[in-house]
Image 1 (cartoon, rainbow, N blue to C red):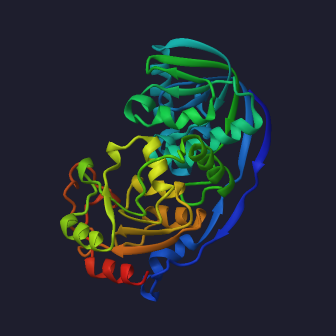
Image 2 (cartoon, rainbow, N blue to C red; image 1 turned 90 degrees about the vertical axis):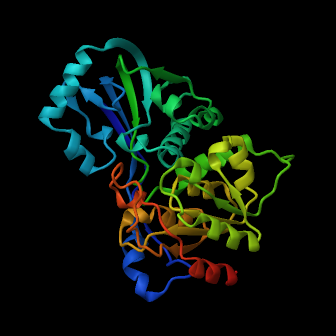
Length: 350
């Protein structure tokens, strides 16, 4: 049952400059993302909802629109067939009764580190501004088992977390829903920057012993979406004073302290670039495909939010060599061959 709704942040239009090394021939890649509309963010209050580990909020049989990250996902999942299947699963689950909760998830939230930083944490920051900290934040257990950094990202907010299992069906008497914080390319800047600042202040250590001003993020240990000619790339970058980091080896404490001291970051398109959020104003070079897709512009827009100078370096093979295509046909997940000549030109321009 619907109770009330209030606007926390109105919809805003954001205009971005082209990348620093932009040439007119590349306009089709960036023009669609230069002007963006960040959705308004609302705090909606409902009574008597259920929730499961599929991240579906329901009123009786029907899956609520607030469960979905965008309209496309709503059309995919919010069908009679899928709702029936989900309903039958819920009948087998154990009922867990909850007096009040704050809901900070949707189907976009399951995408890993980037989505934790850009979608979950801003909602937790807004919850802190408007709701008592003792109101629990329900979180499926796999969010913490799959993403080991999750517990560390939650600590700065101090909110009570209600971890539930796949076999649980939450029956929540009163639900406070904080809606999607702007959209994947157009996040509302205030809750995003404020939540990141809170994490940074919590983990920043003035006595931290390591300072690396120029960082190259390697994805080789992930086994996918890697730079195919990485030895050539790292040799070039080392000449300019860069050091290679494998973020899988680092805690949130280390990542915050390393990137807050960094001035320049180079990486293939991937979640590691999200750490630009912890940097003071600096330079970001993204190694990416030469394709006109907004799916490849997440970090172009994120760099604008955090006032970084954004540069792009293309893939020589333009995504044609996709080692993992059988496992993941999405082109943005392709491993690529970096154009080292273009990368050198960027570095020489600094």
